[in-house]
Length: 338
Image 1 (cartoon, helix red, strand yellow):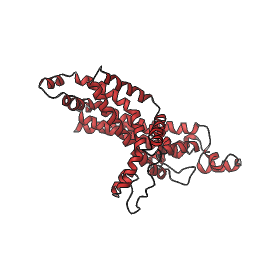
Image 2: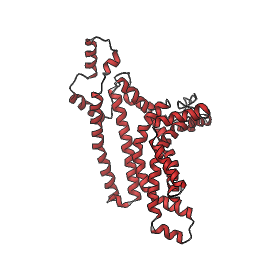
Image 3: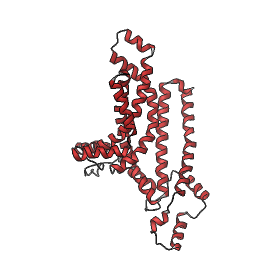
């Protein structure tokens, strides 16, 4: 237990310099991008005196090092600042959009695991067969397909031609009762309200975006699961289990898959970053009102505080997920602690 606690503390402390480096990179990149937030606010024909006055109000006329120091102090106070474009706290804007992105990312990861892990295990079990080659080919092709193109194809096939699933938005217009405390997670909110009609509507709207996001990354898990399963199936204890007469399916899909799942668990933490990045394109394709679309809109408007705030939240989520996965890994495999 002492070694585990030391490992958790060490792993937590290592996230601090990572966040600091990311904050520095974002601060610099945002300010060297072409464009000017003041021009976006006032329009291209505002007098120079008005522009200079607005820059002074926003603190953009101060040296970069001073702006950077002020920004770090704000972050230490857990304050992401105010939007330069809208009269709104950055944290409020992110709080409105973040649940939609987390919901989409969760179901996207669920699709990834449901498709990728079983197919990878089956390909390993049927190695060097037509099924194995077909699954491996699918994994390569699906990973190479751009997420926005896959989303457009699914919209066209299942949303327009077959008219099975909606192609945009989170709901079909259901109004949630104001008497219930809403979390922002529509799946959870509709269950708390026991409005099963709205619950079904929310799930139907989640199908195409989450499938688009999940299928894109399923190829990674197919290859990873297959590679680890091939190593596990050669182990002595697998041969011994089959020699004792244990059923082949039980040996492969219970004993073998469980032992091959530890590297897959580690990869899950790494893929959260890709899922969050893919959510930006998926949200744009499906008009999903999440944090990815918010980031894209504020980049066009050069809203520095909101851009920085969104990326900070992204970084914190990825760091926390990676930390949780590492802790679970240490619990499963005690060798990691030493």
